[in-house]
Length: 153
Image (tube, rainbow, N blue to C red):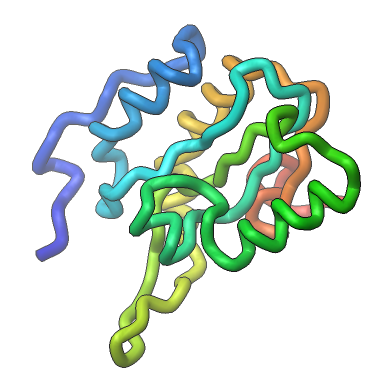
């Protein structure tokens, strides 16, 4: 059964004065959209590099951690190959929930809509404000469009 936004109160926004730890705790109670299983960002609260993806995948949703599925394993290997210490990176997604559709016994990724992106945007903005990274790397079009606008270079 789908839950409605009206079923529970959303946390008060803006969240710009909270730490990453406090944000993660608050996000677990977010009801800004119909997708409630929250996978919040992780990494050092002092990381100079922030990597931003689109949304958690199936394994991220199951484990409750970002970038632990097949794409995350590839990302970790790529960071290692590039000589980037994982402790210097904060990993997060634009959308904090896994949007999917059933296909047989599998849950297949479904691109988040504008409403899910808008609902999660305050959390991403708060993560950026709390972390103050030197570099933000957008991993894909959804992240780039969210942070740079519809037209990005």
